[in-house]
Length: 196
Image (cartoon, rainbow, N blue to C red):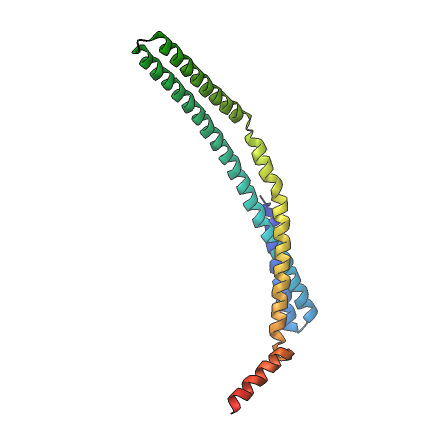
């Protein structure tokens, strides 16, 4: 998780940027106001990265818990498969005792043994694979993505800042709008249509 001291420092940077911006507005100093806005944007980007880091670590912890749950569920399924195989074998053997023909009993017994052996092999294979799952590896893999997510969030914050700043500049310069040729033609066509 992002360090508490870092979070406090980023919040302090934001407050300082706000103060600079307000001081610049009050004194008419555009340079100070712009510097304050830049400090705020930088602090907001750091705060967003801190939040993303916290979320990524929570996701990593959840992934480790999910891997552990999956390991237990697979182990339970393997045990259940072994129990079913034993039940099938017992049922087949019980039914074989009621058949009079020795040859049919022998064939059925062989089939039951093969089925039980295959079920046991599958159960053992599942148990072996479940034992090979290392929850720490899953957690480590999830944590590797944390810095990447934080970097992407920082870039996204910077891009959002630039886009918002551009939008605000366009709004403040709306009186400077020069329509395109296409827009001018459309407006002229509408004017002609309504003048008759």
